[in-house]
Picture 1 (cartoon, helix red, strand yellow):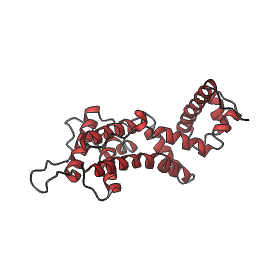
Picture 2 (cartoon, helix red, strand yellow; picture 1 turned 30 degrees about the vertical axis):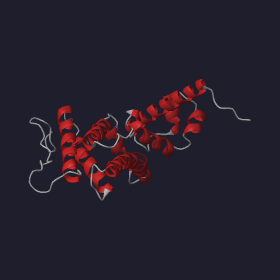
Picture 3 (cartoon, helix red, strand yellow; picture 1 turned 135 degrees about the horizontal axis):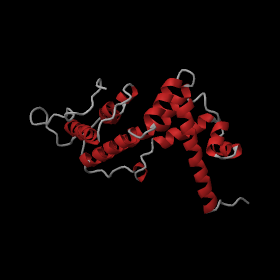
Picture 4 (cartoon, helix red, strand yellow; picture 1 turned 30 degrees about the horizontal axis):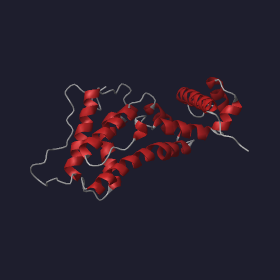
Length: 231
């Protein structure tokens, strides 16, 4: 008869898992995917190979776990805001997205995926399926809840979620792929989120008016903020 592991053993297992993921992330960032072996990860994490293989039998499984962990918001595990106030809800989601995209390792993990994709296409699939899509689906689910509450009018939820996240990531994240020193300040990033929310309200708000009277949602970056094309 199998018994459930004790709280102590669960805590030790969680600590070892955290050590493995931390060591693996550092090795992947320093040596690339091809240059990292499970043996090196076990050594760096100070765990036995048997312990490592028990949790992560393959390097692909280990990378999947890193990607999944990197996309967690860490804020109530990404709990969806309650429906009823899309401005407040989308602002909360937008702020979380900024915090996620500006984590120190996020851009570096994307660079690994891009660099190794010709040899290891499964890395791109992991980044997309384990990271991007679950987060995207959480935003889509929130918009669906707002639509059900009657606060927004939207036919294509996939497109609406793509538009909202794209307005934020196109300023906060993607320039970092080409501009090493891209680091807009918090005020600039908050402003981009606020303007993205205004755009969504203008386009999808249940009480929106067409034509005159709508405030433009075009983002105006505060003076002195970094811009793409400026180092």
